[in-house]
Image 1 (cartoon, rainbow, N blue to C red):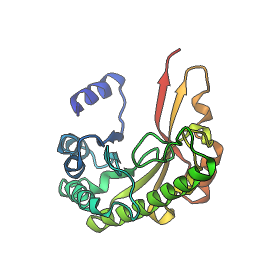
Image 2 (image 1 turned 90 degrees about the vertical axis):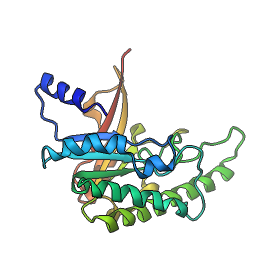
Image 3 (image 1 turned 120 degrees about the vertical axis):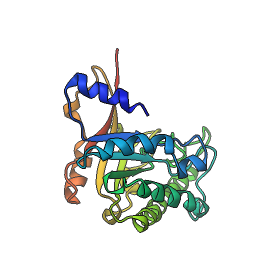
Image 4 (image 1 turned 135 degrees about the vertical axis):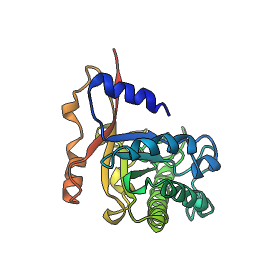
Length: 231
């Protein structure tokens, strides 16, 4: 991580960001999930410089080539326990928000919803969606318990792919079906791809997700990633 480049940008823009968002890899195997020192060590120094700083850490729930399994891939828990311990050992837990399985309502990550096969009927597809939602909720709750057992100061961000809040072929289920419950979530966020000329940032987040956040006493939903595309 190029923290020196980050600090240079901060100096040039005369800003004082107190929150950073970063992503662990889901393509480098379970050992990297357990101890991503390449990512944690640079952020450790950044957090230590100011107690008001927070790192939002995107944690993959599966790695490339591993499928969602009935019962929740319990054998992988040891890697997540090691990750929690490695963050704790660096003194980062109280300043780290864990963002498990981001954009889970999409079909592009291993922990997300299944893609519909070209000849698959709706009657065959919907049970797979239901099973995936159940897998995600159960896995989130279990991993939440693993991290909190290591350090109760960990907090958690449930972060959807916004897609205007609609159910589409690439976001084939209402995000509500993937929500693990208030006990297991501290922050609600949404990622949004915004193409120039298509809409303005004022449109984000969509009203339905803002309403959910407010109804659950978690404050207004935040947009934590905003993709821009020039036209």
